[in-house]
Image 1: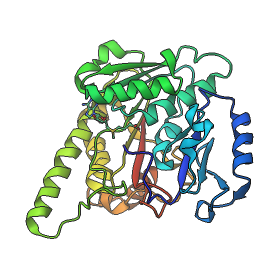
Image 2: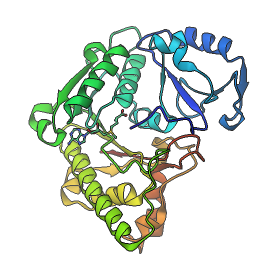
Image 3: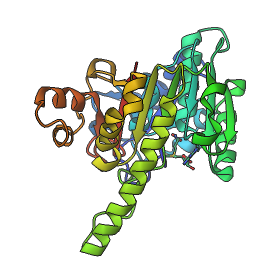
Image 4: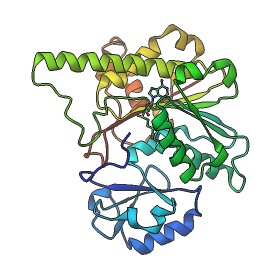
Length: 324
Ligand code: SAM
């Protein structure tokens, strides 16, 4: 969840925040500040800018740029957010009719991005019927979430609930929820500068496996709970982990779960999940379980998005979308 990256990031990603500004005006200001436009993020140098081809209103600049001292940043008109971390809200793409659950919300990067989608979709209105319920278990982190959403201009669009999502979000009381974003705690193995999780001996290997197994059963529970919301139609699950245990294997466990099947949840096809993003899920993980149906495994893997740390321009990441 350290979405602002660190000094080792190959690109500084900045997102225009429509809650605080008029997008074309800020695009013009960015063009003045970064006059040289490049075709790919790996060509960035000081003074240049890259318009991201996947996420609207997202730009890459050279990591040496001191954007935090610029007025656009200080006024909340641009937000620093890794590109991979912008994919979940982009995939969920909520509109002015939606009531969205952000199950694991702090510090709030994706919450403010969800709000940006709703406000952009609503045009001149203030979000219409839309609402975002942002849940955060840790009170100290919920304070950061409160600060971030209010600084970003989310106003009453975001309602913060402090506590465990799986207990607080009682399905009967959230009958109006139409969509959810589930971005639970993970190993963070895709984030730069995290201590390597790779092991050098058997005992470390066992510790890592135990940790991943605990994390994946927690991740499964949170997504499954979101799936129990009676009128939810779309759920995006994401991690900043590169481990299949927290990614494809959580998806497999969900697809095999009898309740999840009964509720009618399926993976959204590639065509609805940033189809031009090249790096997809690992088909071999699905083949371990659905071994006699390779075409199905290929389709399931294609439904997933993966990003490798640095090589894909930012943090390591995984995202997938369920729908019914
Ligand atoms: N979505 C956030 C963002 O983009 O800024 C990052 C979320 S971070 C990966 C996971 C968060 O979920 C942590 O703040 C953690 O405290 C919170 N969390 C963990 N378990 C939770 C639960 N059962 N209910 C609500 N929040 C939980």
